[in-house]
Length: 132
Length: 257
Image (cartoon, rainbow over the protein chains, first blue to last red):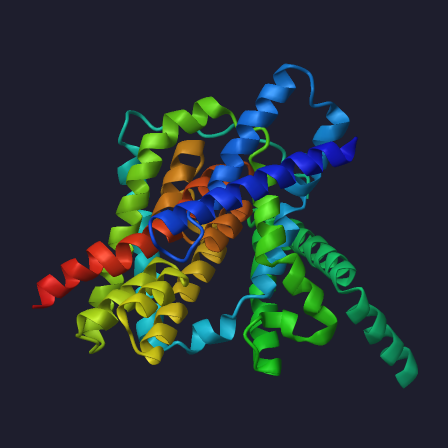
């Protein structure tokens, strides 16, 4: 059943969000610390184990792959509901701080990539046509 | 005629989320057409769609004076729900399905290093820029530094150490600029910085930290990189909110005397 996949995804999200809130509470900040990341790890671990034992049928998997596929449209909707005006009106100090932070962080990517040996090979090419 | 339009807007507002699906679907389709015909696929359709979204958000903000882009228009309120935190995180988590644990483990250490490097570098840059613009007290420098981390770290830090509201607003603006720049700019810098494998995607997420920016930027670059970048980025805001008002504030205060 498709709902099994959706429910698994939802369960992972709730568990991760709860853990993230808990970590935030424990270290004394009013923020969710890594909730999404923890949910992702949970999903990876649980789904791969269930797939290995054959308990996550392909039809149930579509309940997860649908949401994975709807991801880009969701991001487009997110972009369309950002406070772009506030960002632009923030003045030159805000623009400079934002831009410099991005530029310097970008420059560090190749530096940090060298830590721990040669960078892994790029992902293989796929057809430009993607499951959007 | 007016009744027809009235009825239409009525339906669109009542079925807000459904309207959002339809409108975003059309936007994505138009973007992929533009990508294929105008750029011969060089610029991803999703990159164009995200830029169209940001542009629409600007227009929406100017028209309504609100802070949620097109979602402040009543007929398009559903776009705010579709692109809001709940569905966004749900979809981000779903992208982790199929990620190989081996690649995660291999990139784990560099992901953690990149997180700390990212937080400290952004705070430093924000604080230096703040100083250059005349905000020379440690509270304002730290708060604007937090904004250069993410638009959540800025106000969280500022509120914790007692920054003034105009400085907090400035820090949010800096974070928003960063987020949008990452969203729209990632596909252009990706080939220059080797952003084409899981490990560099995790490092990128850790250095940039803005979840919305990284999520959008990687989607526009190569969808398969999204889960790796999003994974580290989601820890960034928490780390920044933790270190900002504590360690980093203390260090900046010590340096400034």
